[in-house]
Image (cartoon, rainbow, N blue to C red; front, side, top):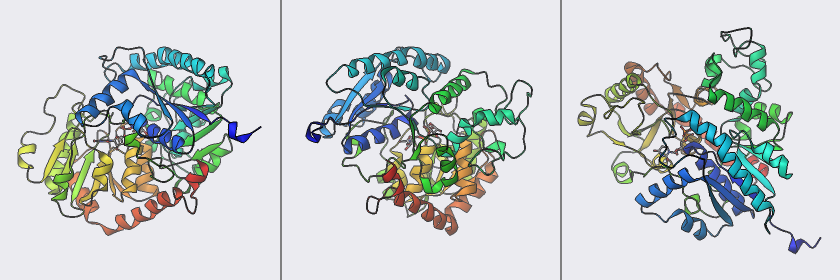
Length: 467
Ligand code: UDX
């Protein structure tokens, strides 16, 4: 065949409609397009509405202009998830999940059908692993399915081997109601792990919820994927990745936000932020190097009023300067002012509380010396990339398992207990310990180098080769 007439590869990239999934998917789409792919990027109508609103408030280009101006071959498709834009998806989570399963999947299938009969048919489907239908759709149209896993390989492996956890009684099954509490030693590629380091969903004894059913179905689909690509680094999880590769082709391609092998900034391609970003630069510029603690619990998880109060009192007692991202819904109850009375007034000389910011810019600022984080996987990778050690307070899902990697395996952070276990004295003591200690800085340099080496273009790092 005459190579000059060969069509470009055309990837259909379908992101999961949550902040922590949209950001890495946009980076992935941008990287694919920078490497010669035609990309059709699918967002839900409701996410499109929210990112456009945030963009306008940030006084940026609108989302379509962004795609056109990036010079990349990215087409942007908006599909309804079956619910009105005004529907509160976080409050009615089960209905949202059901709609993604039945309505959104049907719309995706219609889109694939349309694209397959166009002049530029899709050559692969790349969808977030948490969807429960991509393998079925890709088989129907005879297209390869690449599952995109936005969390560490360790988490993938634990979900992949849920049947073993059930068999050994660490996950409740038909004949054992309580989960075993001793060390887990039989997961291939995971020498040992404590039950308290499992993802929150696998620590529960009742696994009949909608979320559990979605996860179980999603992993049936993931096992049928032609390839899995994961936002991690081979050198950081070598044994787990090696063992996973015995089951299916599993490639570490992270950190996906690394600027190498990309010819444009992702922010110029597709908007990612769901909320308006407060500009913290001027405030940070006025602070001494390494003096500020950045605090954020991500985009999704909630804190109890009690934990929030303990953390706030600990931060106050520690006397460090801080930037605290406090989402309006951080406490699930209808609290208008979730922080303890007087906290803002008494710490106004030392810190600021903002509703949302550009986290990567804050972490990259010289004044930031620590990150009190819920251990969302994107936050972990971004913190390491910026050389900022972490205080870990996991709340939900993979965050407990990510904490194990940060604290026990890589030693670039300190454990603060996590959901339901905040204690003001511990918080204050550990903030002081983290912000002042050289050993964390040394360790984080080592892990950061692994990220940099993996994404180096010359010589080619592991993530570049895998990509
Ligand atoms: C959740 C999971 O915990 C995470 O592990 C999974 O991969 C995705 O879903 P989330 O709570 O959103 O994620 O946390 P995280 O993974 O850290 O992602 C949050 C993203 O939002 C990060 O990329 C961060 O840079 C960004 N962010 C956060 C901002 O841009 N501004 C903020 O103020 C806070």
